[in-house]
Amino acid sequence: SVLADQIAAGEVVERPASVVKELVENSIDAHATTVDVLIEASGLKTIQVIDDGSGIDDEEVELAFARHATSKISSRADLFRVHSLGFRGEALPSIASVADVWLKTATGVGAGSQVHFKGGQLVSHTAAQARPGTEVTVSDLFFNTPARLKYLKSAQTELANIVDVVNRIALGHPEVAISLQHNGHELLRTAGRGDLQQVIAGIYGVQTARKMVEIKGEDADFTLAGFVSRPELTRASRNYLTVLINGRAIRNSQITKALIKGYGSKLMVGRYPLAVINLQMDPFLVDVNVHPTKQEVRLSKEPQLVKLIDQVVYQRLAQENL
Ligand code: ADP
Ligand code: MG
Image (cartoon, rainbow, N blue to C red; front, side, top):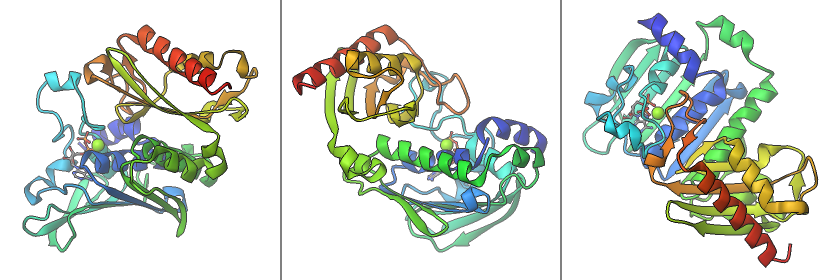
């Protein structure tokens, strides 16, 4: 029902940034090489995400808006080896239940299609000329859930959240060219050439990127790659730490602690390094089913991972005589 959809939407779609996150993750899951995000009025007027990914077959485009209709997992066992960013089939129905959504898509085979949903109801489904890929336009977010609207923070904070979401996805996917525009101003554009340091430069500035050292490490279960700042380059907040597991930005206090421990006494109290840490592991070792937004994860072998991070950071800084 529309009501049930709205209740569930509350868990996935808290704010404009949640919409941006879900749509960009869908583009990445669709193997897009280019993703453009266009925002107006901090996402309250429109959020548009355009990709050059696989597109959706016309017969499946309405199904994409049905709850729990995901094309990404097909068995219970798949839940324990999630390779995609999405898997719950909740984002599109949730967004459509609290906004006005147009989705235009084409696979490159046959005609493209366009659907329009508003407040959880299908308004129209027509054939449409479209380049291969998918374009989703969300407007009037929370038009039918005034409580949600009221709960939002200032336009500036909502925009900051959007920027944060896009930055973290870009850091996790240097191989995808990602751009973000707000009210016609470009806030981010990555080249999509797989160069993480270049993405860091695009987000934090060239000077900052130069003060980062590359880290690499692995053990039997985990592969670690990324950049950490030289100890003289620190911040008073942990917002500049990005940890990704299999391309998904996550928060984990044990990993943060391990990173800080790697700096030893080089880090002043209350200061945090800038870092981007990409961890690759068997999806079996990470449980992303803890929360609908999938940011909280449960890790098997966490102590082993924590030790690896601490050691790799410590040794790398020592090697640079830092
Ligand atoms: P999930 O990502 O958990 O599968 P979503 O509600 O986000 O659920 O999306 C539903 C389905 O719609 C996806 O499984 C996918 O098949 C399709 N889909 C959504 N966005 C895109 C996109 N940008 N490109 C291709 N397919 C998409
Ligand atoms: Mg999704």
